[in-house]
Image (cartoon, rainbow over all chains, first blue to last red):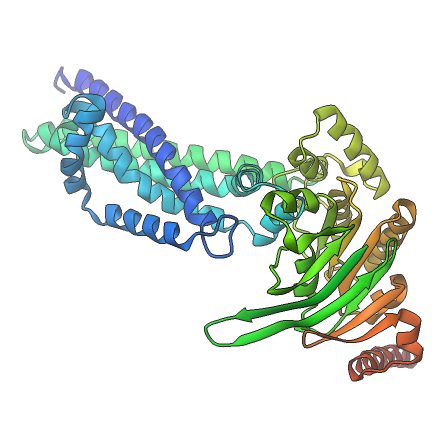
Length: 222
Length: 259
Protein backbone atom coordinates (compact mmCIF):
# COMPACT_ATOMS: atom_id res chain seq x y z
CA UNK A 1 0.00 0.00 0.00
CA UNK A 2 1.31 3.43 -0.91
CA UNK A 3 1.62 5.98 1.83
CA UNK A 4 -0.23 8.65 -0.16
CA UNK A 5 -3.40 6.55 -0.48
CA UNK A 6 -5.11 7.65 2.73
CA UNK A 7 -4.66 11.43 2.28
CA UNK A 8 -5.80 11.14 -1.34
CA UNK A 9 -8.93 9.24 -0.37
CA UNK A 10 -9.73 11.58 2.51
CA UNK A 11 -9.45 14.62 0.28
CA UNK A 12 -11.44 12.97 -2.53
CA UNK A 13 -14.22 11.81 -0.20
CA UNK A 14 -14.41 15.25 1.38
CA UNK A 15 -14.71 16.95 -2.00
CA UNK A 16 -17.33 14.49 -3.19
CA UNK A 17 -19.46 14.92 -0.05
CA UNK A 18 -19.13 18.69 -0.35
CA UNK A 19 -20.30 18.61 -3.98
CA UNK A 20 -23.18 16.23 -3.24
CA UNK A 21 -24.41 18.25 -0.28
CA UNK A 22 -24.33 21.67 -1.93
CA UNK A 23 -25.54 20.42 -5.33
CA UNK A 24 -28.47 18.62 -3.63
CA UNK A 25 -29.46 21.73 -1.69
CA UNK A 26 -29.15 23.95 -4.76
CA UNK A 27 -31.06 21.58 -7.02
CA UNK A 28 -33.81 21.28 -4.39
CA UNK A 29 -34.07 25.06 -4.24
CA UNK A 30 -34.55 25.11 -8.02
CA UNK A 31 -36.30 21.76 -8.55
CA UNK A 32 -38.93 21.82 -5.80
CA UNK A 33 -40.68 24.99 -7.03
CA UNK A 34 -40.44 23.75 -10.61
CA UNK A 35 -41.99 20.38 -9.67
CA UNK A 36 -44.80 22.13 -7.80
CA UNK A 37 -45.45 24.50 -10.72
CA UNK A 38 -45.56 21.55 -13.15
CA UNK A 39 -48.33 19.98 -11.05
CA UNK A 40 -50.47 22.98 -10.12
CA UNK A 41 -50.49 24.50 -13.62
CA UNK A 42 -51.88 21.29 -15.13
CA UNK A 43 -55.35 21.33 -16.61
CA UNK A 44 -57.99 21.29 -13.89
CA UNK A 45 -55.51 21.93 -11.07
CA UNK A 46 -55.42 24.84 -8.64
CA UNK A 47 -53.43 27.30 -10.80
CA UNK A 48 -54.22 26.03 -14.27
CA UNK A 49 -52.01 27.56 -16.97
CA UNK A 50 -51.34 25.28 -19.91
CA UNK A 51 -48.90 27.77 -21.49
CA UNK A 52 -46.61 27.97 -18.47
CA UNK A 53 -46.89 24.20 -18.07
CA UNK A 54 -45.84 23.57 -21.66
CA UNK A 55 -42.98 26.08 -21.67
CA UNK A 56 -41.59 24.75 -18.40
CA UNK A 57 -41.98 21.12 -19.51
CA UNK A 58 -40.11 21.84 -22.73
CA UNK A 59 -37.22 23.64 -21.01
CA UNK A 60 -36.87 20.76 -18.55
CA UNK A 61 -36.82 18.24 -21.37
CA UNK A 62 -34.18 20.22 -23.27
CA UNK A 63 -31.85 20.47 -20.27
CA UNK A 64 -32.34 16.77 -19.59
CA UNK A 65 -31.47 15.92 -23.20
CA UNK A 66 -27.88 17.20 -22.83
CA UNK A 67 -25.24 14.55 -22.18
CA UNK A 68 -24.07 15.34 -18.65
CA UNK A 69 -20.43 15.90 -19.61
CA UNK A 70 -21.43 18.42 -22.30
CA UNK A 71 -23.75 20.20 -19.89
CA UNK A 72 -20.90 20.66 -17.43
CA UNK A 73 -18.68 22.25 -20.09
CA UNK A 74 -21.49 24.45 -21.39
CA UNK A 75 -22.29 25.71 -17.90
CA UNK A 76 -18.74 26.49 -16.76
CA UNK A 77 -18.99 30.17 -17.83
CA UNK A 78 -22.12 30.37 -15.67
CA UNK A 79 -20.14 28.90 -12.79
CA UNK A 80 -17.48 31.59 -13.20
CA UNK A 81 -20.23 34.18 -13.09
CA UNK A 82 -21.87 32.80 -9.94
CA UNK A 83 -19.04 31.43 -7.79
CA UNK A 84 -16.12 33.29 -9.41
CA UNK A 85 -14.18 30.28 -10.70
CA UNK A 86 -14.53 27.58 -13.32
CA UNK A 87 -12.13 25.20 -11.54
CA UNK A 88 -12.52 22.73 -8.71
CA UNK A 89 -15.38 21.38 -6.62
CA UNK A 90 -17.05 24.72 -5.94
CA UNK A 91 -17.26 25.53 -9.64
CA UNK A 92 -18.75 22.08 -10.30
CA UNK A 93 -21.68 22.72 -7.99
CA UNK A 94 -23.28 25.14 -10.46
CA UNK A 95 -23.51 22.72 -13.43
CA UNK A 96 -24.34 19.86 -11.05
CA UNK A 97 -27.28 21.78 -9.62
CA UNK A 98 -28.53 23.04 -12.97
CA UNK A 99 -28.18 19.58 -14.46
CA UNK A 100 -29.93 17.79 -11.58
CA UNK A 101 -32.74 20.27 -10.92
CA UNK A 102 -34.84 19.27 -13.97
CA UNK A 103 -34.55 15.61 -13.00
CA UNK A 104 -35.55 16.45 -9.44
CA UNK A 105 -38.46 18.56 -10.73
CA UNK A 106 -39.81 15.54 -12.64
CA UNK A 107 -39.37 13.27 -9.61
CA UNK A 108 -41.20 15.77 -7.40
CA UNK A 109 -43.90 16.19 -10.03
CA UNK A 110 -44.64 12.49 -10.10
CA UNK A 111 -44.73 12.28 -6.28
CA UNK A 112 -47.14 15.18 -5.98
CA UNK A 113 -49.38 13.70 -8.67
CA UNK A 114 -49.94 10.66 -6.44
CA UNK A 115 -51.99 12.85 -4.06
CA UNK A 116 -55.68 12.18 -4.76
CA UNK A 117 -57.46 15.10 -6.33
CA UNK A 118 -60.28 14.70 -3.79
CA UNK A 119 -57.94 15.90 -1.03
CA UNK A 120 -57.13 19.03 -3.01
CA UNK A 121 -60.85 19.62 -3.55
CA UNK A 122 -61.59 19.09 0.14
CA UNK A 123 -59.04 21.81 0.94
CA UNK A 124 -60.48 24.15 -1.70
CA UNK A 125 -64.00 23.48 -0.43
CA UNK A 126 -63.15 25.01 2.96
CA UNK A 127 -61.64 28.09 1.32
CA UNK A 128 -57.90 27.27 1.24
CA UNK A 129 -55.70 29.51 -0.93
CA UNK A 130 -53.50 27.89 -3.59
CA UNK A 131 -50.37 28.30 -1.41
CA UNK A 132 -52.15 26.67 1.51
CA UNK A 133 -53.20 23.76 -0.69
CA UNK A 134 -49.54 23.31 -1.73
CA UNK A 135 -47.98 23.77 1.71
CA UNK A 136 -50.57 22.12 3.93
CA UNK A 137 -51.94 19.39 1.67
CA UNK A 138 -49.91 18.49 -1.46
CA UNK A 139 -46.42 18.41 0.07
CA UNK A 140 -47.28 16.84 3.46
CA UNK A 141 -49.51 14.20 1.84
CA UNK A 142 -46.74 13.26 -0.61
CA UNK A 143 -43.89 13.44 1.92
CA UNK A 144 -42.83 9.76 2.10
CA UNK A 145 -42.86 9.58 -1.70
CA UNK A 146 -40.98 12.90 -1.94
CA UNK A 147 -38.26 11.62 0.37
CA UNK A 148 -37.85 8.49 -1.74
CA UNK A 149 -37.62 10.66 -4.85
CA UNK A 150 -35.04 12.99 -3.31
CA UNK A 151 -33.00 9.93 -2.29
CA UNK A 152 -33.04 8.84 -5.92
CA UNK A 153 -31.87 12.30 -6.96
CA UNK A 154 -28.99 12.33 -4.45
CA UNK A 155 -27.77 9.04 -5.90
CA UNK A 156 -28.00 10.45 -9.42
CA UNK A 157 -26.07 13.54 -8.28
CA UNK A 158 -23.36 11.27 -6.81
CA UNK A 159 -22.89 9.66 -10.21
CA UNK A 160 -22.91 13.10 -11.78
CA UNK A 161 -20.08 14.30 -9.45
CA UNK A 162 -17.91 11.43 -10.69
CA UNK A 163 -18.38 12.62 -14.27
CA UNK A 164 -17.59 16.19 -13.22
CA UNK A 165 -14.46 14.79 -11.58
CA UNK A 166 -13.24 13.60 -14.94
CA UNK A 167 -12.94 17.18 -16.14
CA UNK A 168 -11.37 18.84 -13.15
CA UNK A 169 -13.98 19.04 -10.43
CA UNK A 170 -11.98 16.93 -7.96
CA UNK A 171 -13.54 14.33 -5.72
CA UNK A 172 -13.53 10.55 -5.90
CA UNK A 173 -14.38 10.45 -9.61
CA UNK A 174 -11.30 12.53 -10.37
CA UNK A 175 -9.11 10.27 -8.22
CA UNK A 176 -10.38 7.19 -9.99
CA UNK A 177 -9.56 8.67 -13.39
CA UNK A 178 -6.27 10.42 -12.67
CA UNK A 179 -4.72 7.81 -10.37
CA UNK A 180 -6.67 4.61 -10.82
CA UNK A 181 -7.00 4.70 -14.58
CA UNK A 182 -4.21 6.90 -15.96
CA UNK A 183 -1.46 5.83 -13.52
CA UNK A 184 -2.52 2.19 -13.11
CA UNK A 185 -3.00 2.67 -9.38
CA UNK A 186 -5.29 -0.31 -8.64
CA UNK A 187 -5.35 0.51 -4.94
CA UNK A 188 -6.87 3.95 -5.69
CA UNK A 189 -9.33 2.49 -8.19
CA UNK A 190 -10.64 -0.19 -5.82
CA UNK A 191 -10.78 2.13 -2.81
CA UNK A 192 -12.74 4.85 -4.58
CA UNK A 193 -15.25 2.34 -5.91
CA UNK A 194 -15.69 0.81 -2.44
CA UNK A 195 -16.20 4.25 -0.87
CA UNK A 196 -18.79 5.16 -3.52
CA UNK A 197 -20.62 1.87 -2.99
CA UNK A 198 -20.77 2.51 0.76
CA UNK A 199 -21.96 6.09 0.18
CA UNK A 200 -24.77 5.07 -2.16
CA UNK A 201 -25.87 2.28 0.18
CA UNK A 202 -25.92 4.75 3.06
CA UNK A 203 -28.00 7.32 1.18
CA UNK A 204 -30.48 4.68 -0.01
CA UNK A 205 -30.81 3.18 3.46
CA UNK A 206 -31.15 6.58 5.13
CA UNK A 207 -33.84 7.75 2.72
CA UNK A 208 -35.78 4.52 2.99
CA UNK A 209 -35.67 4.55 6.81
CA UNK A 210 -36.88 8.15 6.94
CA UNK A 211 -39.75 7.50 4.50
CA UNK A 212 -40.74 4.35 6.41
CA UNK A 213 -40.75 6.18 9.70
CA UNK A 214 -43.25 8.71 8.38
CA UNK A 215 -45.37 5.96 6.80
CA UNK A 216 -45.36 4.05 10.04
CA UNK A 217 -46.40 7.02 12.14
CA UNK A 218 -49.37 7.60 9.84
CA UNK A 219 -50.41 3.96 9.74
CA UNK A 220 -49.67 2.67 13.22
CA UNK A 221 -52.52 0.76 14.77
CA UNK A 222 -54.16 2.96 17.36
CA UNK B 1 -81.50 29.47 1.86
CA UNK B 2 -80.44 28.23 -1.56
CA UNK B 3 -81.95 29.37 -4.83
CA UNK B 4 -80.75 27.86 -8.09
CA UNK B 5 -82.02 29.39 -11.30
CA UNK B 6 -81.54 28.12 -14.84
CA UNK B 7 -78.34 26.19 -14.16
CA UNK B 8 -76.70 24.57 -17.21
CA UNK B 9 -73.37 22.83 -17.68
CA UNK B 10 -71.93 21.05 -20.70
CA UNK B 11 -68.75 19.01 -20.72
CA UNK B 12 -66.84 19.07 -23.97
CA UNK B 13 -64.45 16.18 -24.49
CA UNK B 14 -62.56 15.42 -27.69
CA UNK B 15 -65.12 12.72 -28.44
CA UNK B 16 -68.42 14.07 -27.24
CA UNK B 17 -70.48 16.91 -25.82
CA UNK B 18 -72.24 15.87 -22.66
CA UNK B 19 -74.89 18.16 -21.29
CA UNK B 20 -74.68 17.35 -17.58
CA UNK B 21 -77.22 19.94 -16.43
CA UNK B 22 -80.08 21.44 -18.42
CA UNK B 23 -81.76 24.54 -17.07
CA UNK B 24 -82.01 23.29 -13.49
CA UNK B 25 -83.90 25.45 -10.99
CA UNK B 26 -84.64 24.61 -7.39
CA UNK B 27 -85.15 26.14 -3.97
CA UNK B 28 -84.03 24.83 -0.60
CA UNK B 29 -85.52 26.34 2.56
CA UNK B 30 -83.46 27.16 5.66
CA UNK B 31 -83.21 24.19 8.01
CA UNK B 32 -84.39 21.70 5.39
CA UNK B 33 -82.80 18.39 4.52
CA UNK B 34 -83.12 18.36 0.77
CA UNK B 35 -82.36 15.27 -1.28
CA UNK B 36 -81.49 15.03 -4.96
CA UNK B 37 -81.87 11.50 -6.28
CA UNK B 38 -80.92 10.12 -9.66
CA UNK B 39 -79.32 7.15 -11.39
CA UNK B 40 -75.62 7.14 -12.25
CA UNK B 41 -74.76 9.84 -14.78
CA UNK B 42 -77.90 11.87 -14.11
CA UNK B 43 -75.79 14.93 -13.23
CA UNK B 44 -76.39 15.03 -9.49
CA UNK B 45 -72.72 15.25 -8.55
CA UNK B 46 -72.18 18.04 -11.08
CA UNK B 47 -75.16 19.88 -9.60
CA UNK B 48 -73.99 19.77 -5.99
CA UNK B 49 -70.41 20.63 -6.98
CA UNK B 50 -71.69 23.77 -8.69
CA UNK B 51 -73.03 24.96 -5.31
CA UNK B 52 -69.50 25.71 -4.05
CA UNK B 53 -68.11 26.05 -7.56
CA UNK B 54 -65.79 23.07 -7.49
CA UNK B 55 -67.50 22.86 -10.86
CA UNK B 56 -68.11 26.04 -12.85
CA UNK B 57 -71.60 26.25 -14.34
CA UNK B 58 -71.93 27.60 -17.90
CA UNK B 59 -75.19 29.39 -17.27
CA UNK B 60 -77.52 30.20 -14.42
CA UNK B 61 -77.25 31.63 -10.92
CA UNK B 62 -76.87 30.16 -7.44
CA UNK B 63 -77.71 32.23 -4.40
CA UNK B 64 -76.75 30.86 -0.99
CA UNK B 65 -77.61 32.72 2.23
CA UNK B 66 -78.48 35.82 0.25
CA UNK B 67 -75.18 35.94 -1.69
CA UNK B 68 -74.79 35.13 -5.34
CA UNK B 69 -72.10 32.46 -5.45
CA UNK B 70 -71.96 32.44 -9.26
CA UNK B 71 -71.00 36.12 -9.31
CA UNK B 72 -68.06 35.98 -6.88
CA UNK B 73 -64.36 36.51 -7.58
CA UNK B 74 -61.75 34.11 -6.13
CA UNK B 75 -61.38 35.98 -2.88
CA UNK B 76 -65.12 36.30 -2.24
CA UNK B 77 -65.60 32.65 -3.17
CA UNK B 78 -62.99 31.54 -0.63
CA UNK B 79 -64.75 33.47 2.12
CA UNK B 80 -68.15 32.09 1.05
CA UNK B 81 -66.82 28.52 0.99
CA UNK B 82 -66.07 28.74 4.72
CA UNK B 83 -69.83 28.90 5.23
CA UNK B 84 -70.60 26.03 2.84
CA UNK B 85 -69.39 22.71 4.26
CA UNK B 86 -68.96 19.66 2.04
CA UNK B 87 -68.58 15.93 2.67
CA UNK B 88 -67.53 13.35 0.10
CA UNK B 89 -68.12 9.72 -0.80
CA UNK B 90 -64.39 8.94 -0.46
CA UNK B 91 -64.12 11.09 2.71
CA UNK B 92 -61.02 12.90 1.33
CA UNK B 93 -59.35 13.18 4.73
CA UNK B 94 -55.71 14.27 4.95
CA UNK B 95 -53.64 11.15 5.78
CA UNK B 96 -50.73 13.30 6.98
CA UNK B 97 -52.90 14.81 9.70
CA UNK B 98 -54.48 13.40 12.85
CA UNK B 99 -58.23 13.65 13.44
CA UNK B 100 -57.60 16.82 15.45
CA UNK B 101 -55.46 18.34 12.69
CA UNK B 102 -57.98 17.40 9.98
CA UNK B 103 -60.76 19.19 11.82
CA UNK B 104 -58.41 22.10 12.57
CA UNK B 105 -57.56 22.58 8.88
CA UNK B 106 -60.46 24.89 7.93
CA UNK B 107 -59.80 26.93 11.08
CA UNK B 108 -56.08 27.30 10.25
CA UNK B 109 -57.06 28.49 6.79
CA UNK B 110 -59.51 30.97 8.31
CA UNK B 111 -56.69 32.32 10.48
CA UNK B 112 -57.90 31.49 14.00
CA UNK B 113 -55.52 31.49 16.97
CA UNK B 114 -54.22 28.22 18.40
CA UNK B 115 -56.35 28.50 21.51
CA UNK B 116 -59.49 29.21 19.56
CA UNK B 117 -58.74 26.27 17.25
CA UNK B 118 -58.21 23.88 20.15
CA UNK B 119 -61.47 24.95 21.75
CA UNK B 120 -63.50 24.75 18.54
CA UNK B 121 -62.07 21.39 17.47
CA UNK B 122 -62.88 20.01 20.94
CA UNK B 123 -66.51 21.12 20.63
CA UNK B 124 -67.05 19.83 17.13
CA UNK B 125 -65.31 16.49 17.70
CA UNK B 126 -67.57 15.91 20.67
CA UNK B 127 -70.61 16.74 18.56
CA UNK B 128 -69.77 13.93 16.10
CA UNK B 129 -68.79 11.51 18.87
CA UNK B 130 -65.05 11.17 18.22
CA UNK B 131 -63.53 12.70 21.34
CA UNK B 132 -61.59 9.49 22.04
CA UNK B 133 -59.98 9.50 18.59
CA UNK B 134 -58.51 12.98 18.21
CA UNK B 135 -54.90 11.71 18.14
CA UNK B 136 -55.57 8.91 15.63
CA UNK B 137 -54.64 9.11 11.95
CA UNK B 138 -57.35 8.46 9.30
CA UNK B 139 -55.81 5.09 8.40
CA UNK B 140 -56.63 3.88 11.91
CA UNK B 141 -60.36 4.63 11.62
CA UNK B 142 -63.34 2.69 10.26
CA UNK B 143 -65.35 4.05 7.32
CA UNK B 144 -68.06 5.44 9.59
CA UNK B 145 -65.50 7.13 11.82
CA UNK B 146 -63.78 8.62 8.77
CA UNK B 147 -67.04 10.16 7.59
CA UNK B 148 -67.59 11.57 11.09
CA UNK B 149 -64.21 13.29 10.77
CA UNK B 150 -65.29 14.53 7.33
CA UNK B 151 -68.46 15.95 8.86
CA UNK B 152 -66.54 17.55 11.73
CA UNK B 153 -64.11 19.15 9.27
CA UNK B 154 -67.00 20.42 7.14
CA UNK B 155 -68.69 21.96 10.19
CA UNK B 156 -65.59 23.48 11.82
CA UNK B 157 -66.27 26.96 10.47
CA UNK B 158 -69.92 26.78 11.57
CA UNK B 159 -71.38 26.85 8.04
CA UNK B 160 -74.98 27.64 7.08
CA UNK B 161 -75.15 24.81 4.57
CA UNK B 162 -73.76 21.28 4.37
CA UNK B 163 -73.39 19.65 0.96
CA UNK B 164 -73.25 15.87 0.96
CA UNK B 165 -71.88 14.29 -2.22
CA UNK B 166 -72.91 10.62 -1.90
CA UNK B 167 -71.50 10.68 1.65
CA UNK B 168 -72.91 7.29 2.64
CA UNK B 169 -72.41 5.42 -0.64
CA UNK B 170 -69.14 3.81 0.47
CA UNK B 171 -70.57 2.65 3.81
CA UNK B 172 -72.43 -0.49 4.87
CA UNK B 173 -76.18 -0.13 5.67
CA UNK B 174 -75.76 -0.02 9.44
CA UNK B 175 -73.06 2.66 9.27
CA UNK B 176 -75.12 4.54 6.69
CA UNK B 177 -77.98 4.83 9.17
CA UNK B 178 -75.72 5.99 11.97
CA UNK B 179 -74.31 8.72 9.70
CA UNK B 180 -77.80 9.72 8.55
CA UNK B 181 -78.90 9.90 12.19
CA UNK B 182 -75.94 12.15 12.91
CA UNK B 183 -76.89 14.43 10.01
CA UNK B 184 -80.47 14.61 11.27
CA UNK B 185 -79.23 15.37 14.75
CA UNK B 186 -76.96 18.18 13.48
CA UNK B 187 -79.78 19.54 11.35
CA UNK B 188 -81.94 19.92 14.48
CA UNK B 189 -79.26 21.10 16.90
CA UNK B 190 -77.59 23.63 14.60
CA UNK B 191 -80.54 24.45 12.33
CA UNK B 192 -78.19 23.35 9.54
CA UNK B 193 -79.49 23.28 5.98
CA UNK B 194 -78.40 20.05 4.29
CA UNK B 195 -78.40 19.22 0.59
CA UNK B 196 -77.57 15.62 -0.15
CA UNK B 197 -77.36 13.70 -3.36
CA UNK B 198 -77.82 9.97 -3.46
CA UNK B 199 -78.76 7.07 -5.67
CA UNK B 200 -80.39 5.24 -2.79
CA UNK B 201 -84.10 5.71 -2.19
CA UNK B 202 -83.69 4.49 1.41
CA UNK B 203 -81.41 7.43 2.19
CA UNK B 204 -83.99 9.85 0.83
CA UNK B 205 -86.80 8.14 2.75
CA UNK B 206 -84.87 8.04 6.00
CA UNK B 207 -83.62 11.58 6.28
CA UNK B 208 -85.04 14.03 3.70
CA UNK B 209 -88.20 16.08 3.81
CA UNK B 210 -88.05 17.57 0.30
CA UNK B 211 -86.53 16.17 -2.83
CA UNK B 212 -85.92 16.49 -6.54
CA UNK B 213 -85.48 13.67 -9.05
CA UNK B 214 -82.77 14.26 -11.65
CA UNK B 215 -82.70 12.46 -14.99
CA UNK B 216 -80.21 13.25 -17.76
CA UNK B 217 -79.46 16.66 -16.31
CA UNK B 218 -83.07 17.71 -15.87
CA UNK B 219 -85.33 17.81 -12.83
CA UNK B 220 -88.22 15.51 -13.72
CA UNK B 221 -90.01 15.60 -10.39
CA UNK B 222 -89.94 17.59 -7.17
CA UNK B 223 -91.87 17.97 -3.93
CA UNK B 224 -92.06 16.29 -0.55
CA UNK B 225 -90.64 12.81 -0.08
CA UNK B 226 -94.13 11.53 0.91
CA UNK B 227 -95.57 12.74 -2.35
CA UNK B 228 -92.82 10.91 -4.22
CA UNK B 229 -93.88 7.62 -2.66
CA UNK B 230 -97.66 8.17 -2.66
CA UNK B 231 -97.98 9.75 -6.06
CA UNK B 232 -94.88 9.44 -8.24
CA UNK B 233 -95.34 11.31 -11.50
CA UNK B 234 -92.15 10.59 -13.43
CA UNK B 235 -91.00 7.32 -14.92
CA UNK B 236 -87.68 7.72 -13.14
CA UNK B 237 -89.36 7.97 -9.74
CA UNK B 238 -91.52 4.92 -10.49
CA UNK B 239 -88.44 3.02 -11.59
CA UNK B 240 -86.66 3.92 -8.35
CA UNK B 241 -89.61 2.75 -6.26
CA UNK B 242 -90.04 -0.40 -8.35
CA UNK B 243 -86.38 -1.38 -8.06
CA UNK B 244 -86.23 -0.69 -4.34
CA UNK B 245 -89.43 -2.68 -3.64
CA UNK B 246 -88.44 -5.66 -5.69
CA UNK B 247 -85.06 -5.62 -3.93
CA UNK B 248 -86.74 -5.59 -0.51
CA UNK B 249 -89.23 -8.32 -1.47
CA UNK B 250 -86.44 -10.43 -2.81
CA UNK B 251 -84.50 -10.03 0.43
CA UNK B 252 -87.54 -10.94 2.57
CA UNK B 253 -88.28 -13.94 0.38
CA UNK B 254 -84.73 -15.19 0.65
CA UNK B 255 -84.78 -14.80 4.45
CA UNK B 256 -88.11 -16.70 4.64
CA UNK B 257 -86.65 -19.48 2.61
CA UNK B 258 -83.97 -19.99 5.19
CA UNK B 259 -86.37 -20.60 8.09
